[in-house]
Length: 273
Image 1 (tube, rainbow, N blue to C red):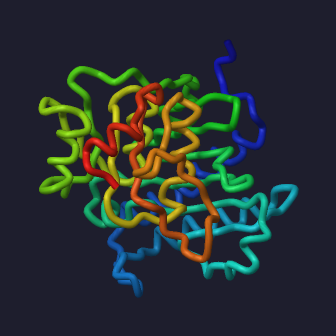
Image 2 (image 1 turned 45 degrees about the vertical axis):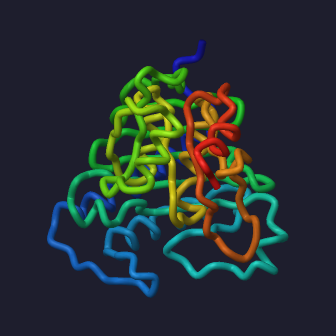
Image 3 (image 1 turned 90 degrees about the vertical axis):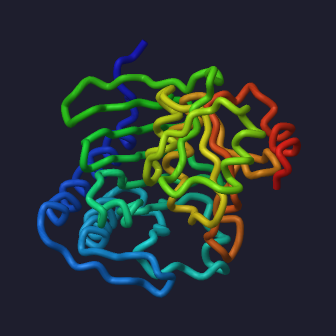
């Protein structure tokens, strides 16, 4: 068994994510201003600094592919629909967590091929944890630069199950989780795409997302989770796909570690979608 991912492009993208993370942490350690974008989401100098690093790095690769990124003007659907391969990037996922300074934010870089995430890199800059995956190469975790790579695997559904969720989790979502997992499930609050990574390394079991997310929020971590043996499904039980249309908003979804369970049936029994 190889003790590292062994894919040169994946290693390049991992290094690029670490460079973007360095740019983010430079801002994180200082006082910074927070702007509010048109959709009411926050924007900081760290988002823009990471965007600059990633775009410059991807432009040096061969071949140069199109990029869809949260902090860039999006190509119109008439153009995007022609793309078979492109990069899907969130330079700083979890800006609200960044502003709170709780460390629960990530850099997300995914390669999309015909609507599927075939390469994914998720970096948590504050802790230096790096998760990488490529189709057929497995999912890997590096706790800090130059540390050994560890192959990671999702686990069979635990008893009691652990649900990764947002810190505002509650209300109707709580009742749905009880119907999905039983009365004794445990909640593990966590920000950004780190919830997928927690499942991918066998430290949690499910993440139910109600409400909107964008494609760049999920693609990289979906690749990591799938290569670890898990799955990301819409609420009908269908695998989450990308570049589906003009909108870059995902359907509501369920991320799971134990892909052997009939989650579609459980979702129907829980009254979803």
